[in-house]
Each structure stands twice: as structure tokens, then as C-alpha cells.
Length: 352
Ligand code: NAD
Ligand code: DAU
Image 1 (cartoon, helix red, strand yellow):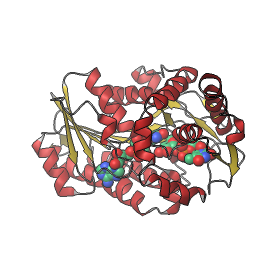
Image 2 (spheres, helix red, strand yellow; image 1 turned 60 degrees about the horizontal axis):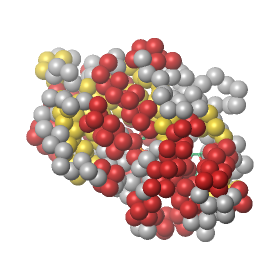
Image 3 (tube, rainbow, N blue to C red; image 1 turned 90 degrees about the vertical axis):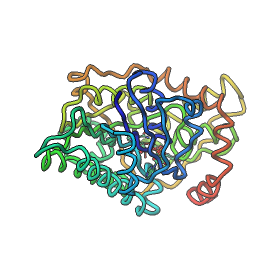
């Protein structure tokens, strides 16, 4: 039995990953280490409480003593670090927590694991592995006709969020280069799917449509993101866990670049045609652009395809419909979030 710490397992991608791996592999025990910030939600893991191969530990990844305790108690041999402050707009408001969790938190995990897994000079416990879940945002922004990001693209982050993620990536690489500590880094494009916190674009559009509220589109809506269905991201990380080469970076992307305005119109039109014909494009409101707004992200995932035989399985047209339906069927989940602190956040960010 492998004992795997998944940090940030109560967040969007983390919770999808916990469900994915428990189903995929009967030989793992998952220890979900999550501080439960505003973005952490145990509702995302409903139904797993009785699973003997799942444990929850409410722990901050910056807390060295607690990380040591958890690693010892569960005899951990793998860490997959999803925990992060993940929202670009919040990082522009105040980067402090991004530096703490995304950089110091990662360094704490690396340091504790290095000390607990070492068995000789540059030698670590059999099967030990640390995976840093990073982002395509570390590469910066592409022009319209530029080639997609490869693993060799130089790091050029622009927001405090992406700068903190790039810093963590550099630390992870440094642990490999200096100590031969067994690491892999994954860099994925924008995810969409169930359980995403509605500060992010797609669930925010869903929430506003359901309430007939205007949909804030930054700038002229022409910024481009490369959207990947979250389950495909989970599968890619699982493949990196099983067979990813130590010291390697793997780009993960959906071959699916869309402008923001295309995304908004897609969702509005689906809801208009299938649910409520009063939901229409009049809801679209162009607002002040995000500061330093990256123009375009696009991932070249050739390396993970060649080395680990991964390709995205979900076509955007299917994934977006599945996602819309999930939010429609889980409006109670959405309401529990937007009825809390979220409203204050929304009013402050969008000055409504
Ligand atoms: P999220 O904000 O939904 O979840 C983050 C989780 O981390 C929450 O459960 C939160 O409680 C937890 N957390 C935050 N600080 C913590 C701390 N100090 N200690 C322990 N737990 C803490 O994020 P997400 O969208 O699921 O992203 C997960 C990871 O994937 C992040 O590292 C992010 O950078 C990366 N990523 C996200 C996307 C995307 O499109 N969402 C794409 C590429 C990479
Ligand atoms: O590329 C991977 C990254 O994708 C992850 O590393 C981040 O954690 C994740 O949050 C996401 O970052 P983005 O900034 O691309 O995602 P967001 O959902 O915030 O915005 C998507 C696009 O939509 C972006 O161009 C900004 C725009 N947008 C967003 C919001 C919230 C709007 O036009 N209006 C909005 O209200």
C-alpha cells in the first residue's frame, strides 16, 4: 500500500484528484492535508468519509512540525502538492499569502520530506516521490501567433500568483539538482469541471447566469486560455506519479484555446436554449481589465504524450456541457459557497 499525501485535497483539482486516484488504484491510501482556507471545502469530498483508504488532516503546509507528524503517522512515501493560493485577482490585491503558501509551504514540504526519506548520500526511500502541481502561467504570456509553451520555454511570470508558483518550481528543481531529491513538476493550463470555486471564470459565469446578474468580462474579452477538463488533468498527474522521470517537467494541456468571450457565449447560449430563454447575451458586461492581464496561454503537451502516453480524452464541447449540467444539478453546493464570505469578496472585487 502506498501512502500518499495530497495537499490541497479539499480544493477544486485536489478533490477531483482524490476521487480519481481512489477509484483508479485500490493500493493507495490518501492523506488529504488541507488548511481549509476560503477555497477549501469538505463538501467537495462528500461520501469519502467512510472510505478506509482516505484520511483528512486539517494542517497548514507551512507548519513543519505538523507535516513531520503526518508523514510519520502514515508512513508517507509520496507527496503531491496541490495546496496553493490559486486566484490571480486575489494575488493582485495582496500577494502575502501567495508567498507564504506557494513558496514557503512548498519549501517546508520539500525540507521535511528530504529529511524523512533520506537513506544515504543522495539516496531516498524506495519509491519516494514529490510532485509539484504547477501552472502554465509561469511561462508568462504568448502573442496570438507565437508557438505554444514547451518545457524549455523560459519562465517569465507576470502576476504575484504566477511569480510565487515559478519560485516554488525553482526550489523544487534546486532540490533535485542539489540533493537528487526525487521530484517531478507538472505545468497545466486552465482547468474546468465540477467543484471549482466560483471566483474562477466558468463557475462565476454559471452563478451569475443562474441569478440573472451581469457577467463581468475583463477588457474586450479577447484573452485566450487553453481549457482542459479536470479529470484529464488528474489522469495526467496519475501518469506522472506512476512513470514520470525524476527531475522532469511535464506540460499538460487540452489543445483547446478559446477567447474568454467565446466561453461566455457558449455557456449563455446553452442555458438559453436548454433551460431559460431569458438568459441571453445582454448579461455580458465589459469591465476594467485585470492588471497585467496575460494575453494568451497555450500548452504544447508533446512530451507527456510521447513519454507517458497521455492525451486529453474530453472534447471541450462535451466537457463544457458536462460541467454546465453539474453546476445545474449541484446548485445547493454553489449556494453554500456564495452565501458565505463570497458576497463580500464579489462586491469588493467588482465594486457593485
Ligand atoms: P483551489 O484554490 O481550488 O484549492 C486550493 C486548496 O489548497 C484549498 O483546498 C485550500 O484550502 C488549500 N490550501 C491553501 N493554502 C493552504 C495551506 N497553507 N496549507 C494547506 N492547504 C492549503 O486551487 P485549484 O484550482 O484546485 O488548484 C490546485 C493547484 O493546481 C494549485 O497549486 C494551482 O496553482 C494549480 N493549477 C490550477 C489550475 C486551475 O485551472 N485551477 C491550472 C493549473 C495549475
Ligand atoms: O492557466 C492556469 C491557471 O488558470 C491556474 O494556474 C490558476 O490557478 C487559475 O486560476 C487559472 O488562472 P486564470 O487567471 O487564467 O483563470 P480565471 O478563471 O481567473 O480567468 C480566466 C480568464 O477569464 C482570464 O483571462 C481572466 C478572465 N476573467 C476572469 C474573471 C474571474 C474575466 O474576464 N472575468 C472574470 O470575472
